[in-house]
Image (tube, rainbow, N blue to C red; front, side, top):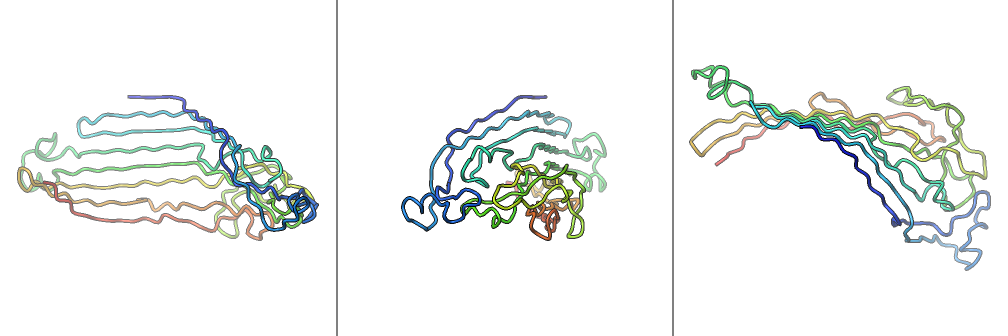
Length: 280
């Protein structure tokens, strides 16, 4: 069975925490409107609503119902999520509009297969020692792929001289993905960015970078032993991230950092667990 469809969501007047005391670039503390009007110098946070978001996706699923010991599902989504943010520019949220930390491509494949050996199966169904050994085995798996999440650049806000705001990098050239991992090999071309000039916001948009894709395959093997008519013992061996493929973290996106553009973290090492399950 194959299903395909469009999914869309709209978010309107979303809540946010703002900084009404944020100063325009280049004005320093003197540009704080709350300080200028009320003489209040401490940080002011505004809890309000007004931010918008949207999500659009093509979603499709191919599935095979259980027959002859096999069932599987393939699900894929191609999506885009956009939203308004409160940073970096606290003075004009419309300039903070862009991709909302999401995976553009998502693929999930899961399967379950009862091996065709032993009593009641197509092969080796005549009993005996061999039939006992190969009977009642089941293999299962889930493969997941997710393209890299979006990443925002950042920069030292000191030169902005606009307290309450944060800062992003300037884009000065085309962005190329080099695929490097580790402190000596950048993930993307760092020459495409530069620290912004004093007294103004950087030109990098929201979510213009992407982190590495994520891949994993979880695999399990089950063996069922028929103890009595209503009593069964199940052995389970489960392998999380069977291929031991690392999940690399996001690249350092601070243009003022000596580690800018590099990826130095990884998670999700392979894990193995075994268990016995009594079914009655």
